[in-house]
Image (cartoon, rainbow, N blue to C red; front, side):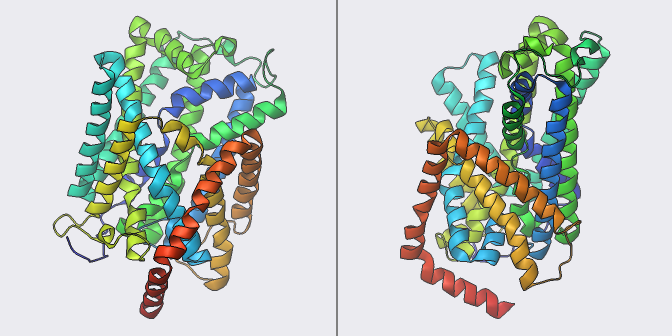
Length: 449
């Protein structure tokens, strides 16, 4: 290993866009539309929710594009929070990502793959855990061996994922096995739907989490070629592709399964699969879901360790995590750390509920990051890429995200504020162990600039 902190810029526009699409589109596309459709009871309202949440994600992506152009280095939101508010806030974000969110999300995706594989392979509980851990280790090794190899894997998994979904769309509409009458009435809510305000609130929450993860591309900014040009475009293109896929896939499901027959996400997907492929529909959709989730897992394993790498570089984590492999040019130890923590969580189990406690905090940090754009514009007015429509673009995002926080907090206050409390425990850790080191790193960055 070497103590060099210079990562090679090897990621182009296609791979960067694939990272956004690959991470965002996972199993949620097969589950979320069911709950949203049943609650809203209207194809027209479902379309509105997808468009609004897509517009929200696009506003955020454009803001992140400017932030990434300003600070084209590894770490993403951690770096932007550090520059806007200082090391303590950035450490709290990194603490949350390192201790819970990233390993927990990695474990959850890997176990999801194993669960769907079990459907066809009849694996035991031990076998499913072994498959989940093996998937994590294989993808981690690929990313340690090189960014090009990891990017190649994400890019082709994304192409395969979109190809599968495209086939479902073409076959779904072209087979004539559904009914266009399922879209009528287009706007009026069906009987037994949730009250309009509650339905829209639930749709907004579900829609937000369906778009979750588009911001993770920025963690790889230190390895993207021509970042000021590539990152804003990849973020915007990725969000627009995801929005289109969600709208078309939801439309195909509604065409195949009447709204009043929707009971749950699993049955919605199973019903659509059975309509399309007969009794083998479950197996076909399981294969499609495995590819979708595998693409998301590959993107998370590729992007998340860059936060620990950036923290270690700033003196806010163990120095070894800042080392770059002398042959492969990757933050190998940071990648290995994430894989080990995720594998331990797979063995321990019971992590899905733990992750859910931190959704509220993730949204808070996302809002703080976008708000930091106003702070950084005052400090440094110019940038290689400026957010189109500023200041309206970040304001739209912040208004919508504030509404989302109110919905999340009021819907489950105990869960939300427990997550905040656990993240707050990172404050004494910072002041006891890392405060002096962060001052030295800040002084060194200042002297270099």
